[in-house]
Structure formats: structure tokens, C-alpha cells
Length: 133
Image (cartoon, rainbow, N blue to C red; front, side):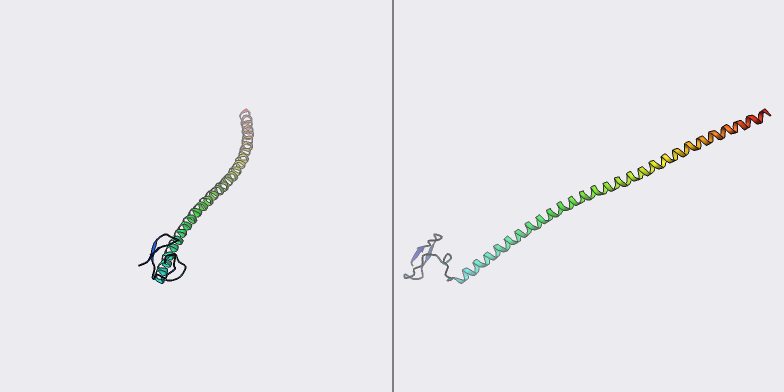
């Protein structure tokens, strides 16, 4: 049996005849001698490619989840800030209306106190006149 060393990968391979001029093993040669090995190699390549695709897909899914989570958290923070701003605006508007109402009520109270004092003075004058007579 004739054995030669492959020039490409360095493994020993058997020659089919003494006249065979091959310098590359069956796996390294570009000729298609061993169809079964080629099918197995293609199947292995397909399996590895599928594994790589699945891994890339899972990585992309993780990135999308992280990206989605960060965007949602940013959105929620932004919305929270906007809601707080709206609440503060509404509260400040309510506080301003309450303040103006209290100022108006204070003015009315002062006016009523003035009228009450005036009426008491008049009452005391009337009572004093009635007692004198």
C-alpha cells in the first residue's frame, strides 16, 4: 500500500494505485472523490452555521430586550418628570386661586368689620340718647 503525506494539512493518506499523482488528501483536494465525506462535511457546516445563527439571534434578542428596557425606563422617567411638572403647575394654579380668594375674603372681612364698628357706634349713640331722655 502506498502512503503519501498531504501537502496542505500534513496527514498521511493512502493512494489507490502506484500511478496516482495526488499530492493532497481526499479531504483537502478540490476534486470530488468521496461524496459521503462531502455530505457529512456540508451537514456539519450547516449545523455549525445554524448554531452560529441561533447564537447571533439570541444575542440580538438580548440586545433588543436591553435596548427596549432602557428605552422604557427613559420613557418612564421622562413621563414621570412631565407628570410632576403638570401636577406642580396645577397645584400652583390652585394655590394662586386660593390665595387670591383669601385676599378677597380678607378685604371683605375688613370692610365688614368697618361696617360692624360703624353700626356699633351708631347703636351706642342711639342707646345713649335713649338713656338721656
